[in-house]
Length: 156
Image (cartoon, rainbow, N blue to C red; front, side, top):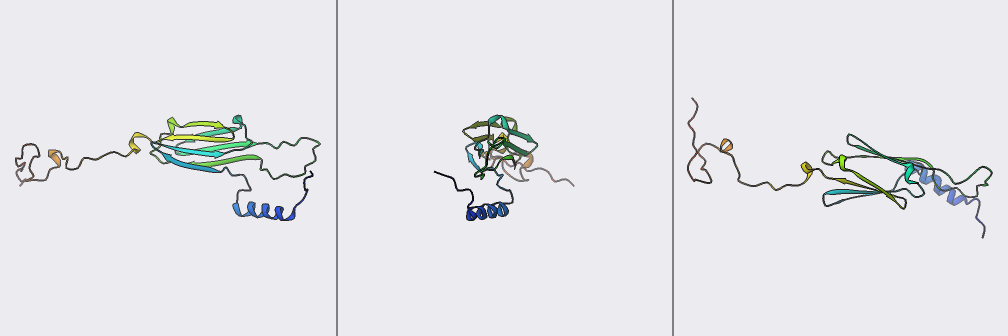
């Protein structure tokens, strides 16, 4: 079996993909979902080694950088080269309700998995209806416990 050295139609397709995507083929495919009280983000980094992945957080910006080098060596004759290599990067802007101090990153089988917990202040909470304090009760309102009027004298 031999490899075709040049396929003009495939080459045009690759050039069009690069021109239209604006990234030149250096993107990280990503999937992000909310699962319970955390966000789960997975990024595909095939052929990248764990030590070549860098994840940083600064304020609300999560930055991911990765590097993949070509396998070719000095003296190799390149027959087909369709794999993107070099530096890849992606930035995610995180909401203020995420707890970046507890962010967890794992790398396995070319997939970077990030788990970003939702902070306590960002979690939904039940608000009790009808619970008023005496200071917020309107004049003439009745106390819910005693049933007596809490009317105050008017300031003149």
